[in-house]
Amino acid sequence: MNGTIIDSETKDPIEFVNIGILNKNMGTISNLKGKFDLSVSKKFSNDSLTISHVSYYTLKIPIKGFKNQMIRLEPKTNELSEVIVSNKKIKNKKIGVKSYSRFLSMRVVSKDNDIVEVAQRINIANKEIKVKAVNFAIRKWSKIDGVKIRINFYENRDNAPQTKIVLKNIVAELPTQEDSDWIRIDLNDKDIYISQDFFIGIEFIPNFENPTIVDLGGILTKGKGYYRENSLGNWSKLNGGASINVEIEY
Image 1 (cartoon, rainbow, N blue to C red):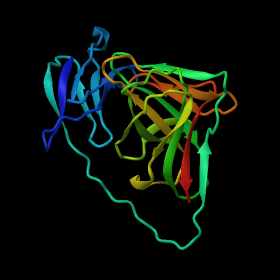
Image 2 (tube, helix red, strand yellow):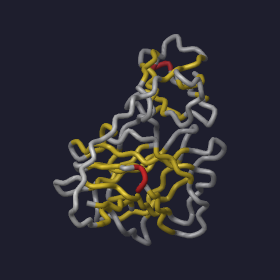
Image 3 (cartoon, rainbow, N blue to C red):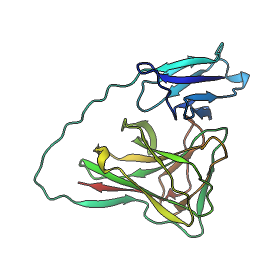
């Protein structure tokens, strides 16, 4: 199956759309021109293809009879959050996994031009916080040239990532890694406010030429980590935690 995904209003192609069979670990992602190509086994012929992007309404198309086609997604209407002005003293804090083991890394490899994603649970007190930045550690032997990442925020339900709770398409390009180091993605101007425990996800978008090999830092003593290797696929629990943390203001 192949096709092109465009904005229903502007007719512009939409890049990095997640395309797959929900929870079946089979999917792909659209390229910079909105195009995708996906081979699906006949055993999934009675399923539907889910087309998902955080800025657009999700679309489901029956696989049976699917042909090369133009797929139009309807953009979501942005709703502004309530802003409360206060004169209290602002505090800053870093929450999550702030270190990694020298002897441990978690390898994830992209397949068939699909994403790989790692998520870490973030516990916050019973108050609203602003997310100012996200930090994650990538080891020096990773192969991430030309790779972009998308930052996702998920509802914590039964100690696992579920529905996205921040409807913003936050994409950044990774620098070429020379050494093991922490990468910081500044989110201060994104105005992200959250008032519940959540999972922060780092979605690695392939460069569509070579497989992406990411060795993310990790630590066994911190649990609550998850990963998946397919768009819209199942989450699998890690045997520890991924080296991901957030800088918050409250």
